[in-house]
Image (cartoon, rainbow, N blue to C red; front, side, top):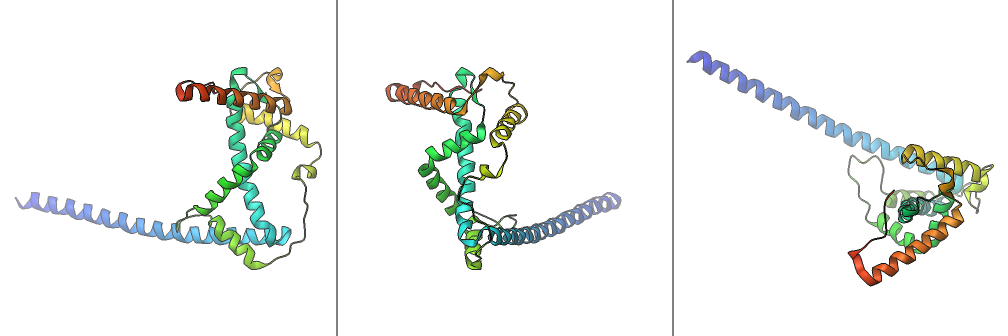
Length: 219
């Protein structure tokens, strides 16, 4: 009847209007996302400029390489901590252990950094420009900088070892949820030796049995 036809038409019309509204809102949201991404990328370029004013354009690429290297070294350090988990031992100074891993795997990490920078992608909504663009923008500015210090940043802190050990304890307890006894916190140099011995043992077993057996256990 006519009433049912009118009701069906009204329902279809309301559904059509709702779809149009959703489409318009999605378009506005996409435009807003692109605009916000552009503004935030420009802010990132601006912050990079102030970084160059401090340390110079020539140091910017090395700084970015160091940031990524430290990130990869931290990931590697956490894996190495798991490699000796069977002894329930962890380093008492995680920043120092990360620095050791950075020195020991410098060439390998350098290749990983190059690949990451080379294949880094972005979109119109990205909040950060690619590292390649940031480095290129910094080099175009040719800013000399006012501060240069060729030594570990740890020298800028008082009692860095004590601060690092406190942060290590907090990282285990808060971020990892690990309650570890003080006697299971090994001096970093001693722990590094245990890691090396554990890696040698794993490599020996792998050479004999392949992937059929694993000595690595997670905490």
